[in-house]
Image (tube, rainbow, N blue to C red; front, side, top):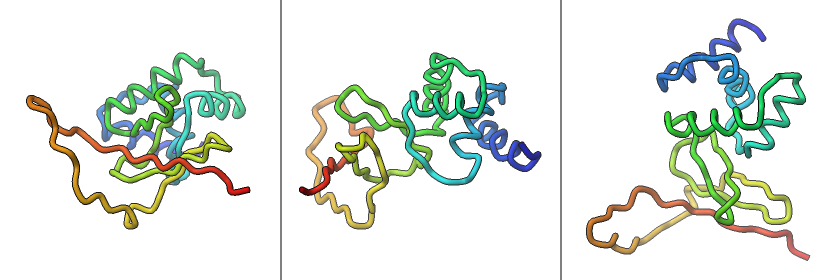
Length: 139
């Protein structure tokens, strides 16, 4: 890994106040090292790390993803109430969930129009609105 690539991951971690441990830098490289946004599951990130010969346990991947979410570096998108995807794009935007492929992709936010939300119950406020549009291939 070049000095410049390493700098990208350590800066990403530092901006959120996270120490750049070996495991965090390894996972950050897989998430943002190339500058592209991506959607991963803990399992797919674990497999990617293992495929590159990085020694990181699945439990460490889960704990690190949770720390990245808590620090505001990732957005967690839950599908089917049990499967979580982690998105490096933390800006509010809708998603397509491709049911046939168990894959999450960004949907064009400029085409989404939400005219009105229901009032929150007394004593509550709306924290966020997640839009996941489920797709399946025709035919």
